[in-house]
Length: 184
Image (tube, rainbow, N blue to C red; front, side, top):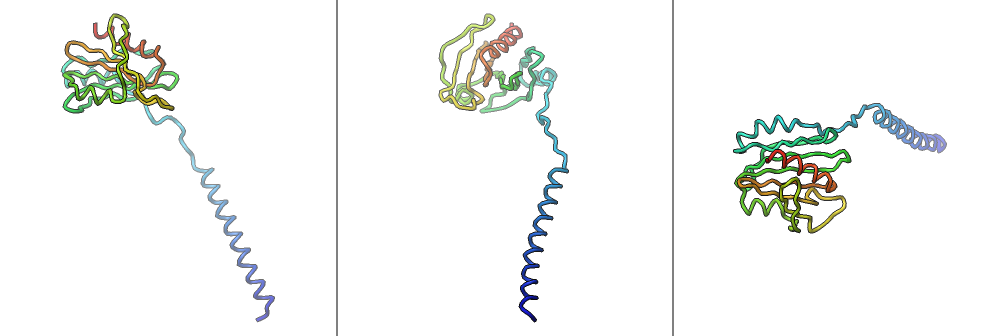
C-alpha cells in the first residue's frame, strides 16, 4: 500500500469527522428552533373568594376574602395547619408584580406567631381604617426583597390577621382597609 493512499485515508477520516460534527450541530439547531415553547405564566389566578366560602367551616369563623383592585390577582388560597394552629392563607400579586400574603389564624399561640414573624421586629403601630396594626419590618433587608420584608399584624378577640410581602406600603394600606371593612 502506498503512503499517499494511507495519507488520503487519514485525511478522509478527519474530513468525515468534521462533516459529521457539522451535520449534528445542524440537527441540534433545527430541533431547538423547531420545537414550540410556551412562554406564558404557569401560575394561574385562583378564585380565593369561592375557596374562602368553603374554608369558613374548617376555620371556625368567616375566612377573610377582601375585595381587591381589579388589576390585582390571587395566586394561592388554602387552609394551613402549623404548630397546631389552623390558618387561612391567600397570596396576592399586585400590578407591579409584587407579593402580599394574607394569613388569618384562629386560636393562635405564641409559637405560631414567633414562627410566622421570624426575622422581623415590632417597630410601632399604625391605625388604618379604624384598626390598629402592629408594624413588623424585617431585620435583614435583602435584594431581591424577601416575602416578609414588611408585616402588618392585627389582633381581634378570637383571631390574628397578618399581611406581609414585598409590595409598597400603599398596597398594604389598601389591603388593610379592605380587611377592616370585612372585620367590622
